[in-house]
Every structure is written in C-alpha cells, then in structure tokens.
Length: 198
Image (cartoon, rainbow, N blue to C red; front, top):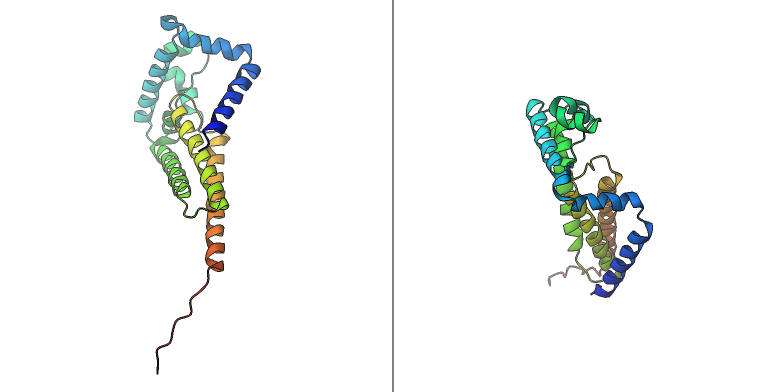
C-alpha cells in the first residue's frame, strides 16, 4: 500500500548517502572488493574462534571489554600484526565472552521479548486510524530490530543505544495500544442483564 512512499524514501536515502558519506567510508567499502589481499573476513573468523575459546575457558564471562583485554592471549598473531587490541566484531560472541552464557541468555531473551511484543502490536485488532498508526510504527521498529539482529553477527552493538531504544519504543507503543483498547471498551455500550419474569 505504501510502495510509492517506500521507493521515494529509498531514493532520498541513497541520495543522502552519496552526499554525506566521506572519503573514509568509500575507502573502507573498497576493501570489500580487494579479494585475497583483504584479511578482514579471515581475521573475523579467527576472532570468532578466539571468542568461542574464551567462552569455553570462562563460561561466566571475562567482564567488560574482557575480550579486547585478553586478545593478546587468544589472538597473539593478530594483535602483533595490527599493533593494537582486537575486538570480536560479533555482538553475541562479545556478550558471551564478556558477560558469560547468562549474559548472552539475557540478551537473547530481551531481543525475543521485543520481537514478540512488536509482532503482537502489528496484529493489533481494529481498523481505526490510531490502530493503523500503531501497526505501522510497530512494523518500522520490527524492521529496525531485525536489521540490528542481523548486523549483530558482524559488529559489536551490545552497548549501542539503538538496541535499547527499540525496546523502549516498543513498550511505549504497547502502552498506547492498551490505552486505546481501554478507551474503546469504556465507550462501548453496555447491555443491561434482562430480568426474567416473576
């Protein structure tokens, strides 16, 4: 129903990207096409294996920034090559490495809870303008949540505000949905029970 607006938004977004992206962004994107000389993909696999070893050694976690600080132990060659501490580039492995398996379970439960609430809001009963607006907002947040979850496999986003803004906005939408339903039920005519003949 909103294909025209969506295409217009994508075109404007692409134009803004080309207008605002600096040379550093384009240089970084060019490294994706460099092929065998780019060690990024291979080094990330090594980072993920190192994080898995760290989780195996410390299932309750190494604490905040624990993987970075222990990267000389688990990735000595990569640290020597880059000359700096290494990060894991995976939100889920970083969470497990820093906050242990219980921390990873908490993150996954949080993401699943937000997903479930947004799914429920997208199916909000009613066809009024308020319900449709909540359904659209829930869809937009759901797309953002899916994007964050997929990007989490390749970047560290545990401490990014957007992850928690989506949960907060989902809770706000849920409260609006409850208020709308309560108002609708309060305005609905109530049928008085009929008394039988004496």
